[in-house]
Length: 479
Ligand SMILES: Cc1ncc(COP(=O)(O)O)c(C=O)c1O
Image 1 (tube, rainbow, N blue to C red):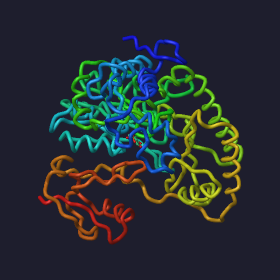
Image 2: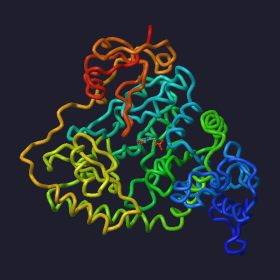
Image 3: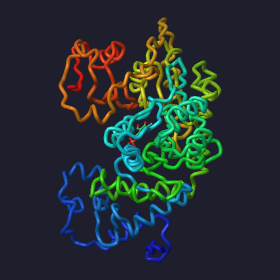
């Protein structure tokens, strides 16, 4: 379909069909007798309107003539999604207005029925467990490799996957995390090949990898490596607005089932600002992604070098690459806090006082993200702040506990069975031996400490007490 738009009154072929349709619509200056109720910002709290800019609110449009409908797209949204699919090498792409989370859940609902087995690492994001609760699918946890200091998931070895595939010949779906929050990339090509040879579909959670494949110095996108479904949080590393994400399908065979699942889950009033931000994030990546990300990689590499020269090295690829991990995204800087003699949480607090806000503060490290939105001047300010912090405190900070996620949980019920049972709240002191009815997955990073259906062992309770305090409570299933 050829979408026509007007740039300064000149007719051109649309490069970002949805964004341009929004602009064209706005230029007509229609009087609004429809939603949204703020009426182009006329009914909006003035300081809010001033902060956003009147034009932003005027572009907060809805399903109006010429603006298509995300639930059954036939016009500009369809065209924008097709452009995204062509750019990312997918047969079909979907715009998501509720984050990558909704894409993960939709694929699980579209591919699994109650009782079907899903192979996954236990460090999957909480959205995956929500998908299991909604679908009734049964999790089969893959053996995973970890880096003990500072306690990071590395991935699943092909040998561990082959063993699980042999033990679970009827499994439907393999969930890969490509990359992890910390930027570690598994041996996806091999893992995908093994799973597909056994008839499983492969869903790659690339929430943190929307920029992958844009230059040769970044890891490949899982779509390129053969994954059937790839979910990206375009808002996390690309220029889209928060919540805006994409789901790509390698083949369109199950496209209608995915669309149906998305319509089950998503709002009927998706934000056009979010959707247009996806259209323009794709456009900027298409027009200048290679240069932009080449520059971002250069900024990250230079920062890494300077930090290493100052004796505070970031996690490097050679520390993770091995049987379970194929590589590391260099634009993700994981800085262990041990050389500073403080915890990652304390380090983040000190940096905040110096005007630097981190992505994640964990007990043993901080995580920093570099994108084309950063430059050398900004990275110098960060470096100076870190060098100032680097006064020896005389303390040695070490991580003490082995993350719970490394252990296999005791599973009594499927997540859905446990979720649907009557439930009651128990104090943690009395909860041992009960079956959890709730998902406990603190964000960020949203990894599950407890999944509904698991038995609350003494070890799990200890972790929950750490999280919720000694007087904390937990929801358990009444069986
Ligand atoms: C690994 C992983 N997958 C999925 C998600 C969910 O992404 P979104 O916030 O776009 O819903 C996150 C969010 O942090 C994540 O870390």
